[in-house]
Length: 141
Image 1 (spheres, rainbow, N blue to C red):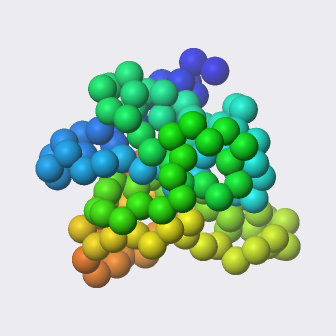
Image 2: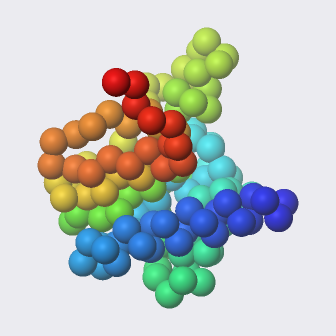
Image 3: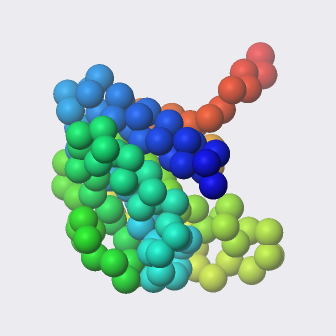
């Protein structure tokens, strides 16, 4: 549990730093529930990261159409932001061989946004900065 909390705090610090280095962009967490396609927010890693973002003096927003806890949840976000990709259907359900629905974004990301992807699945996008958080491996030459 301690390692999970430290990891969440480190990720929160990283998101706040990205925001501060880029004109204090808002921080939006893509997915509040504990995994895609479920409403339950109790035990959610997203809310733990959000707690630490709050401890670092920032207020995170969440976009998650199914979240049963609507605190801090917005249905859309219309400006550039630091976006944490907390949900990824392919990673969560891909091992089953049966995807419940196609992976999709919960809102239209605005150019100028910084997409932080701990799953390391998000492709490069023109007009966006994509960071594969936690990737310590060098790209092959």
